[in-house]
Length: 133
Image (cartoon, rainbow, N blue to C red; front, top):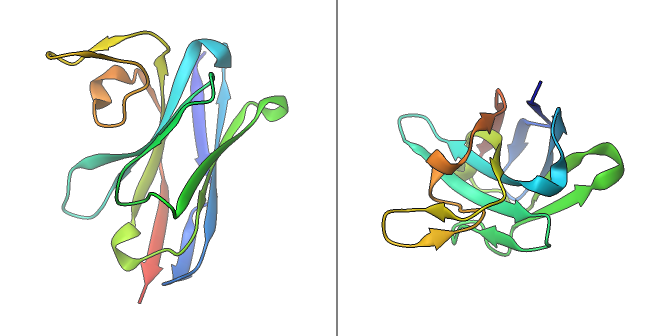
């Protein structure tokens, strides 16, 4: 059974840091991409980062230089290190898994997309991150 479980959310002040974890089970990590997404109150869900087992990591412009994705193969876990947090980072954060294959966006193919959430088949339950000013 495919399962993704996020943890590590919490409340921090602006400028603080948090590390989110996404533990995956039930499938072969090497055959999947993992993405991080977030949904702020009253807004749609947006992509934050995507991780390809080949080592390619993509970040949304809004988090570049502040957020970092890393992997612990021994624990089948992906991490999202979030530094210099801002109030606008407040959201529910989700990790999701997509098969590592070209996804047709309607205009082009992409592997491990950030913005094309439909590519992701499996989703975690989410973890709340709150950043106060």
